[in-house]
Length: 119
Image (cartoon, rainbow, N blue to C red; front, side):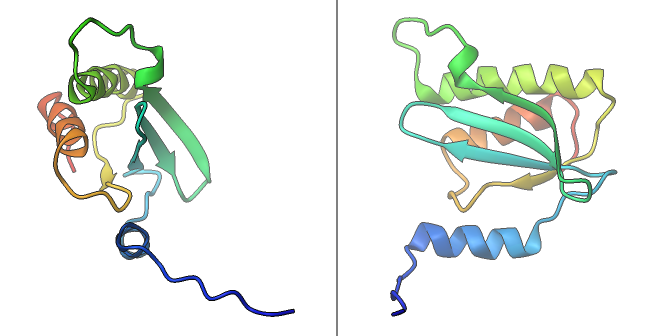
């Protein structure tokens, strides 16, 4: 068998660097953000138990004409905030998933913080 040399992209390097430092616990679960061209997906994960506690995405949100991806991501974050309050979670660890902190990722963080959650 031959080894395949795989060079990492900048995004993959950022993701690995962030993931090495960020771990979710039962007291402070990890809020993970995944961005695609189509939508934004949010998960709150307890890494100690290996379980997803809550999730939200832009897939379940009705699109209004002229609405941007950032506005849809903000709506998904607001929905996630409601779910987290119902299961009594107030403190989180933010995992931007290797994405730069701007645009949709920043909008999600600001909406979650605005609802009273602590990073």
